[in-house]
Image: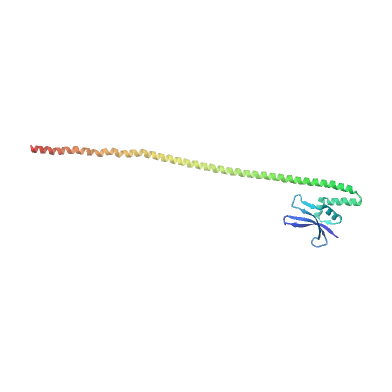
Length: 228
């Protein structure tokens, strides 16, 4: 029976995930589903591959044909390498023990390489995060300095306005004090003038009796002469 190993899509539109399935290639619509042997998530870095290695190896040895993407995944997991070594064992080129030993060495090197890539990606992400935080801090500091400078200008302007208002008030107060002093100086002079004029008006009153006394005395003298 012609069998192929392919991916079956699922998940959201922009966050698609895939199942690794074994299907009959003679059936329509990408073949009739036979068995699911793993999952594949390309949204992570590196991509996440969860695979039943034993079942995948068994199907490959039975002649199942993987698609290009699945073949790359099987090579990544060492399934194709294991198939190559097993064919050599079946042909008598190497022993099963040697094949297993070579596969273990290859698998250890592959895992070390994968781990190195993961660590490198983690270091890169940490460095990028640190650089991003430094850039954000720089922007935040610049913004804080701009706000502080703007506040200082506003404070200086307010102080200048208060000082100017205080100077105007002081000048106004001095002007009012000057006006009051001038008024105080002019007021006594104006009040003393009528007091000086008052005796001049009263002078005639003192003279009138003196002028009238002789006139009254004169008739009295005339009357005395007549009686004599």
